[in-house]
Length: 153
Length: 362
Length: 113
Image (tube, rainbow over all chains, first blue to last red; front, side, top):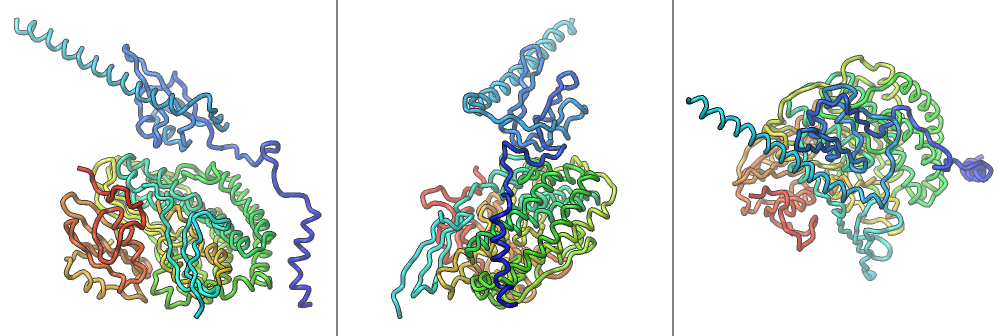
């Protein structure tokens, strides 16, 4: 009896020769995917109010808004820097303007050169916003200067 | 008196999971002295959290200090930030944090046990433990959305809710796991060849454990009843959900394996109590205050006691953040406990301390 | 968290009177840069339920040497070696080089002027 309890694990391990392997042959077989998986972030331009709160709370800095000289803003998003934490979804005051889907984001290829392109885009966006703010300040200062000589009359 | 040799066990080694470096002085295959070098993965996280990131974003940065205890770091930081802005979180958020901490403990302890078995030479047991561990990664993916980096605790509460069908899935899978855990306990306790390698190896007695201030299952296997879950009630209600402490008295590798296995039974009971008794309330407490003053928190990660200290200065960026990982306390004891052992049992001893060098040298 | 303020001369006596190996547990040593001075804190806890964290604090100029507490607490050499490299303070019997490479600039956690 004592000898068989010493050899119990040995016989069980020998039985593994006749069982099929436990490995899932991913990506040819699919693994378990829950239906609220943390997937790609989507943006609806018609609902956005351009408050830029999502850009302020994003931890890695994956969202940036650029502005042209008339004041219209454009949304840019980098899927390789984003950590899919949904802080932007929680910070948005308008429900549905930014949301999370359940499909995984597409991987980035070498030809896209995604990080170099993003770094130059980020700096240009900040510069365009600063240029528009400067233009607005100058217009407001000109308006006050034109009003003052007229009022004194 | 034989000749003494110095043998290095380098940063790259076939049996190490983490980059450690030891230099042993041996005589006739017995170790006399050891020195350690543990700061290979220093990334400067404390410096980054106090200069580049706002205080609400720091909980995502800090969750990436370690891959195995990611929920412990982000929960401990959220607790210290909530003390600095002086808010209380709702009850449902506390219970959900405890649920994910216990699920994380299951997968981390099974990883350490399989690694000990592999370093003792028992490859079949390594594969079997890894096969039984796979269900916990799928459950964590169903609860948090991701297998490793959870991003679950935020300042003020938790990020996602637990759906009822996910709760039922957890209870079903845990029932199947209990019988598998009984089988594992039987093998780790009674197998004769494994006990030859593990019993009386890497032993540390109770007086040395007290003198060297060790933490975690390492201390509980030597007879000290220290567990942060046993000592606090205000931040997370552990005693309400049925926590009990597990200790052993031998202090060697075999005792540490048994402490980790019995802690898994306690974790299963806690998870079942949480899912059956989850209170209804909100998930997040909103506030617009800025952090001010200083605060300190302790939490029980799978490897021991985790400590956070933070100081704020009424702006969005913190002034000082200090993290103390559980392996940081055990480094001094690791170096002392090698003395007197055979050179061939070093990989099993290093694996049974469960070192997590990413936490130590953040 | 409970704070105990003391001076450099009374430091070792204060720690020796406070620390009881059966009841207390040493956590870590921390240093905060206050601009002109540096505040160094020694953290201890008791194993009661609920626990209390006690911090013994001193404030010094950065060039003064602090005594080492390894004769009271045997495992404090790891925390002292880390502070010497990262905060650029002086502790007796502790050399540089445990954390950072020898040719790296020392004290990266200090505030830059």
